[in-house]
Image (tube, rainbow, N blue to C red):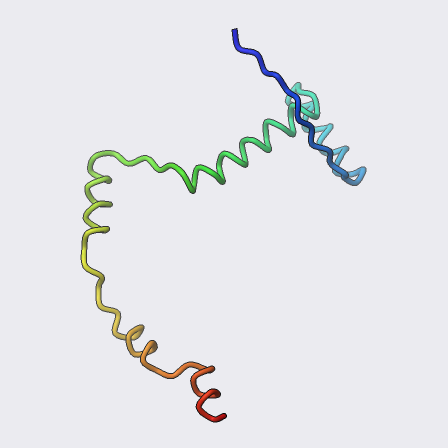
Length: 96
């Protein structure tokens, strides 16, 4: 049997219109406002964190990913020229 022991609390200060919108949305989902906020906040948090933690590839995609990582960098002549030009601070430092 799984128990959800909730001991921490988060308090929010919101304007009345935002509260009304949350209450209306929670009602449509047949949830309490707290359940609605927690469910949606956790969903958003998991989405943000998933971009940083996980990505799923099939075998073919994994091979292509590995090949891209192992491949030598391609030449970018315009970028190489740009990096050889003096920058804003280089020009002004030389004047002083």
